Image 1 (cartoon, rainbow, N blue to C red):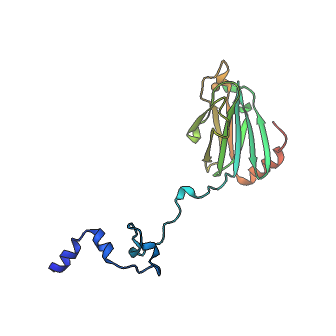
Image 2: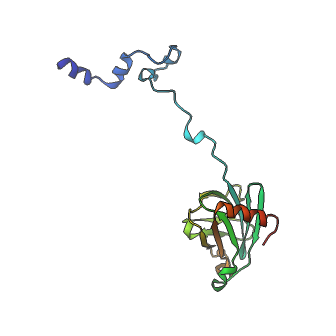
Image 3: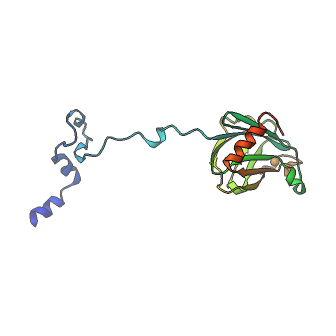
Length: 191
Ligand SMILES: [Cu+2]
């Protein structure tokens, strides 16, 4: 019992150095003092962050202006454009509508030429400022859309001028088949 207890109390570094390399035919990799090849663990894999990320299925170029939005959607080699007009709360049904598929990775690129706006969809729990001088190539983010079809309200969250409150828009989430149909019918014909 005493010999077993003694082995248990040895420092882990000593246990490692006392064992021999069982998993490698060459001792070349054992020259480094940090080598722990005796543990028979596989070689380190590439860090997760270095793996290429899949391209988003849909890209939306969002342009804020006084006082509405322009949405340019690219998906599957097709492009659809929506140009909005300022609307009041009681005209919300006429607000520009951004159509997206449910449960899909979407990249938003944000641009503005006049003043700072803020793109906000409360149901997505995300908003981001749209800033003149910072292009959409730098000011961008990705989300996965909700997995629930429906129409979700959007608005500007930055006081940007006298008609700021009229910068309403809608995000309509539809099935992938409906989205494909939308892109086919809307491509090249701005609303
Ligand atoms: Cu605003």
